[in-house]
Length: 176
Image (cartoon, rainbow, N blue to C red; front, side, top):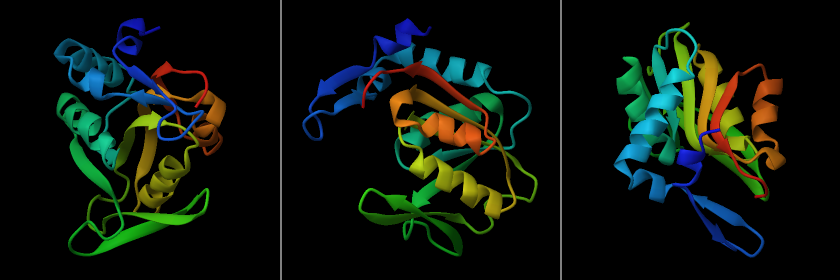
């Protein structure tokens, strides 16, 4: 499934530390045909009308903006806390050692807006799950989450599914 996209994603062993197989989407982004196929297939997997695409900083912005245009939807930025001007709402989430926080503009969406969450990769799901909580806190209906790459052994996609979110990924890679 989607082997043509998988072949355009470079694997860099032992980055950022030994034992990690880094899935580098920059090679996919450099390939115009591959990028177009990626956006087309992500868009084709969306069920129903979407009001907003919420992209997670930073690579989620790349795929999210292209998907928003293709779907005729707006683009909502899910940023690291402190990066957005004006009033924001935020959500904390756990890291391996400590916590982090993401934010959106307080007026970014109307209650009941149908939102598609997008990022390049789903691993443990910590950031994506926090984004879902944040979007719901703001009044959104998060109808689906879409990723280019899933690392299923790390359980993030399954965690989102257990939270009631439909999840779609174009390719899956073993390991982490």
